[in-house]
Image 1 (cartoon, rainbow over the protein chains, first blue to last red):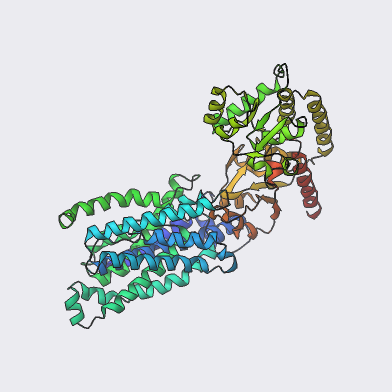
Image 2: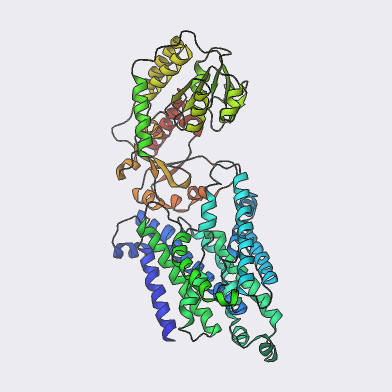
Amino acid sequence: MRLAGGLIVLVAGLFILSLLSGYSSAGAFDSLTALVRDDASPLSVVMREIRLPRALLAVMIGASLGLSGAAMQGYLRNPLAEPGLIGISGAAGLGAVLAIQSGLVLIFPLALPLAALGMAVLAVLLILALAGRRGTSITLILAGIAISALAGALTSLVLNLSPNPFAAADIIFWMMGSLADRSFAHVWLALPFMVLGWGMLISLGRGLDALTLGEDAAEAMGLRLSRLRLMLILGVAACVGAATAVAGAIGFVGLVVPHLLRGMVGARASALLWASALGGAAMVLAADIAVRELLPARDLKLGVLMALVGAPLFLHLIYRTRKEMA
Amino acid sequence: MLVLTGMAVAAVVAAAGPAPVPPVLPPVRVVSINLCTDQLALGLAAPGQLISVSRLAHDPDSSAMADAARHLPTNGSGAEEVYLLAPDLVLAGTYTSPDTVQMLRNLGIPVEIFAPAQSLQDIPALLARMGAVLGREPAALAQISAFRAALAQLDDAPANRPRAALYYVNSYTSGDRTLAGDILSTAGFANVATEIGLHRGATLALEQLVMLQPDVIITGRDYPGQARAEDNLNHPALRALPGTRLAGTLTDRDWICGTPKVLNAVRIMRALRLSVEVTQ
């Protein structure tokens, strides 16, 4: 409970800081007043229409990615299982790009998260099929590389074929992710899918705890493994699909956060779920503050920052599991 | 970027000097591989002198002279393709791939490079130079005086200019030292980008734009197909400012190139300015 309190305070603090990061040099008090009271001043528009949705999306996306990472790792009992690394985010991005480029989103806005979710389901199914029930790290990572590469190549292909001269420049957004200038439209688009995904993944806690004893023991305790797997696939796809549809693929959140928190929750898979959700929210908030404070005029992509933090940890984890892989 | 624009300015200044010595005989097979030289040449070349224009010249969204270009075959601006047309002069822009230009010159084809206009004042110099390289000086002189006369008629900026922002895809804007910025100020607007020190093309963050509270936001056009980069033009914050008018889109073709067609853009912007003054 101490950890929960600490994480909530951290997320709340970073949320306020995120609201206060940006171009306008107005003071903190004025900014927050303008946020609460709509007086149609430009500052009020900035706070309510630009920064608030951005901070909310950072929380929602961070929680979704952290939770998805923890759930995947609990199910596969492998600390390397992360939606970005194993190609789920890439596939969701492909789905989103297809929905946008086909013009489907103009007729039916929900096509954006739905297409991302659909492709994410495909990717999770493919991963689980390729990695097997007790996937070794090597098969998991190789399957992930293949799916990421295919999704990335198809995304580039679709964008290069677009008649729009700016579509090709979008490739970097879909590969690296950014929250720049997102609006409440994106919040409402993603939120229902994320809430659904959160519900499904959090409900897996007891099952994942049982799974730590091994599949046979878990089934002997009454765990229905097929149902757990279905909930995991749909939950991860809903979370990652919705997050990627509005912000592009943001990698490494689901890798770094559960890794940092695993020790603090006593390696209980169920506790790691909610802790990773809060930790993920804090991490994406912090990264989104950093991209604005470090290079304000450049729209530095979130994925760049996450990779700088996450890739060394990924290498470290591979190094630690090299015996298994040998 | 700074170096590039610096070079472009230098090239324009050089072009404004005494016109290059005209070739003894004017070229008879001229190929243009840049949208802006396409349009300058289309306006000045003798019948049959220009034998090919770049692909964009046929696109009515990008080219103000798409109709005039229709009867000419297009090229993809590649050295191989251009060489096979056997031109005796190639017209290119500063941003044409230097490899293409070098390859053509190595193959013995003269290439004239034109810098993009940075202001309306660059246009007479561009016309004069194009007239000189095509051996069409009288036509160029006629267009220059017509351009100057038309421009003088539009010059009635009020002392109290409405504040306007140019806002394109990807949150890009043009400051006062650009052709688009000069069109805006000639039409009688004050460009808000200069208030925050942006003089050339630069990123104008959505937050900055909102905080500047311009009277009018003039957005870039919507390109065919979809791109996430265009999302900024539909952001609800643009419509949330009570005193700001979101005034339609600018017509790219009249704004991109330094040709007499920019007068269309000045006229449309001037009409917009007059309508803004009435409502205020």
